Image (cartoon, rainbow, N blue to C red; front, top):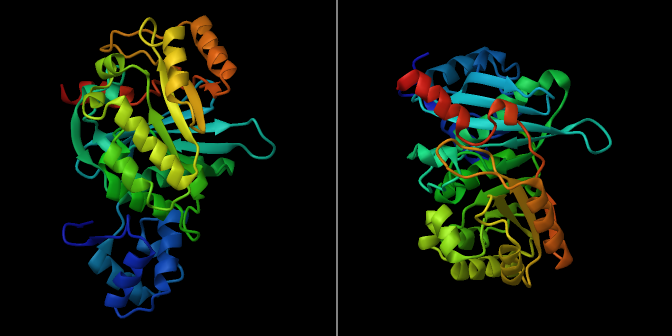
Length: 358
């Protein structure tokens, strides 16, 4: 279907669609009908839309289209609790997304989608496969939302629903601020995917202007910060962004965020053997988190060939957790998932690009 001069409805919110239909001299209620078809049912075909007349469908085909990501690869882990997707965008670029199942509660399993916000990433963190490929472009709001839609369609046969979304995949969400915030609001629309704001999290490496903006949005979303060291020298060596936004300024910004929002902050901490896993680091981390309402999420490092870094042994991770808990700071160890399907950000994309383009 030729779409060069047609309006893409994927990525439009309620107001956008109301205005679109009003320009067509249609009633504004059509927007909620379209939202249901695009975001709840995952449809990209106007012919499927049974509550639209034949005449309206023909008019829609002439003026609009609904884009959809193409699934290039869909891999399921051996224990079936993690599924990884490699999507192709309309311009041929590739992104990754993951959906994870959690059975540790009463009722049907809940699904969490980990989605991307950019093609590649400019942050170049030393332990991340995505950063090794560099930054290409921001994703549109539609491309961000469509990751959830396409993954939901793939698991719909089992009647499992994606109830949680984390923007923790490829890219730095706060460097694609406007599209990310628009996507979050679309995911929250009751007639669409209806994902609660408290079930949506943004993960950032510490983009202070973005943190300041989001603190004024009034959204009950979660904020996770990739910290990885309480020492500037060490953090700068593994996260170059720390040279621009050093820890003192970052922590002040986060303190202001917490004062304004009252929201707990999750601090992501990748455990890297011999780099940041000693008790001196734990002690300093406890100091800089004093006064915060915080959760520390210790992450056993995923091995990346180019990183030249190793995962901390279990006894070090457990000792780090025990020390932090002794200081009254809630500390968890992230369960390792999808290691058999290369679920770490950027691994599958890089492998596929290597086969396809190199």
